[in-house]
Image (cartoon, rainbow, N blue to C red; front, top):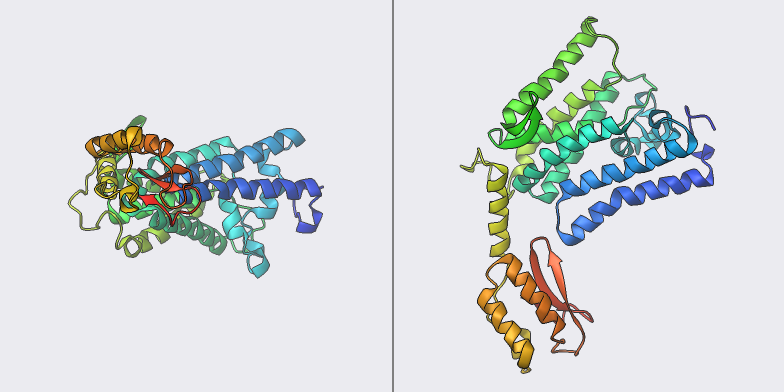
Length: 347
């Protein structure tokens, strides 16, 4: 099979299997994060790494460099064909493919270091909206600036720059741990943006003026992702966990983490009334002792989780006598009936 101008009908069964695995690995971390109410930024990092691993494994198995695989030609952004609605899937698929490990790791670095604190500010769903705006903006910028090109463009760089754009629009004074000027330390977001975006604009100017050599980096996509997210971030951030008018404009990562922990503690729920007493089946013996200790020491997230896990092992559902298990949602923990959550979900 050739690796340029690939059509869907050219794919063999093993190719379709590889694509299926890539889709499963790309979406799996998001499903897990949604169910467990964990970080979508970390889910994105894992998603990109898993897809890159499949690309790498395929390239090793068939002796083809990652950037020349049929995946790039079939799933990357090719401006010359984007007028066909049937090719619109490329706007999404291109953001999960990378040319090599340096490409994917450089994007993951930004998504992790900038994306996680931004998610703490925005909340998961708003963060995901900004992330999608970034790569859509980057892809649109590339298509509009190279309308006749048939060379595929790939990568999550537009999305990564979109995160920077959103952060700049909403909380530019926040300090983020980031490798800049040969030092890894907490830099203000505005300075990170000034240097990273400035380098992109300088590279674009150099390419246009002929003062720098040709480049296979889609600088226009980076800039497009940044500005689309920058323009729409503030409306998206309305109602986010951190107010746009918050006085914590220069919050560090540890301060944001502490704020999230405080919010989680506020959602822990009351231990005053228990479902066994309410069902006229009060606990006794070891279960009663554990419940008492839970009420005495359960004002911290970790101790509450530990006592709830032990309580679930020593109790049964007061409604159906079914087994009890612990259920973890983000930082919070509760116990529920394995037969039906409508029987017991406590606290």
